[in-house]
Image 1: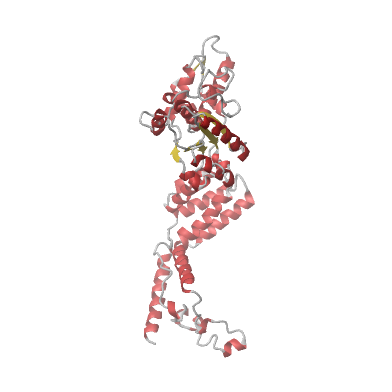
Image 2: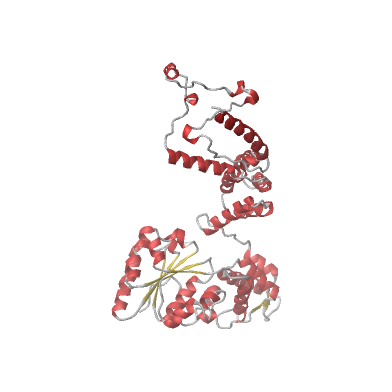
Length: 453
């Protein structure tokens, strides 16, 4: 009995793929020994190696970038541990498909055989669909291997995560990708079998362009080899790949910035932390990386508005104006010119003095408001616009600051129970230094007045 497989997939191991299958499919590893780039999982002491050897697999979530080997590892584990392999894609499947696999798994279980369900892009299942897996994973009807490019803590329901072991696959580095390319060039059974040659510089150019994705590297190699063969320069000799072949085959690297995924959050985090760390070079790099990846430029524009108030604040009150002007300018200009004011704002904010006194004051005041309830407002501060309010004492004793020396009246404005409380403490950075001096004078005058009562 064979499992429900992706269209075009073969069983976990078996005959050589058709000669006209894509190179990336033909070169899929057939044993854990052929897996490159994940030694912490598939190496001699790796968790997956030990689990396969023990022929007892726990339910897993494989979390890693595209082309890092999630599907391949699942197929190999099923083959080496003796499980019947079923595969579904969360993009094209639903609960009804899961039920069909569960029924097959139950029949296998009665025959003392075990079933493994590989669910690709598990994060694309909504909560109800993920919940439908729980009882069958929990009672051992099937072993689940879910694959995702997004953080399962954000995209997979907690009960399912708690029943699986989360394993992180790393992006393949250039050395690993170059080794995969070299293997495909030399492999006579599944690869190009010497029909094309590529020097070290070309192999590493393919690896660099692939951005950690083995599938992309092999696809680029296959197209570049076809381009080189089409030139026909060497007659029957192997076609020699050039850097131009690689550039033409690759066209343009697609930067990853999934608007709903981890890359989105990681780039946003790196951008804000670079601004906060006063590194204008890193800040403008991450800004433009988001833009070049297809992110809506108004997203970093909004983040800069928040940053201007939260992290620069009164150390440079102009920062908020600069950030707001940049967002408005982009809305007027659009791409590509609109990225200029955004870059200007990023550079300005990164180079500005920093203070988080505004957010600290806001949070402290909010906590007092929540915790102390509706404290009575001092009578002098109450609205006295209506005659009845005046008769009830509203506004009585109010001292108009502009009639006072230095335009400051040394009185308490907070409710009596909070008198003397400090929510705002200037940092002394940038223009807050002058603010700190003024506040120190005014607060000292209020304290003297309070003691003199």
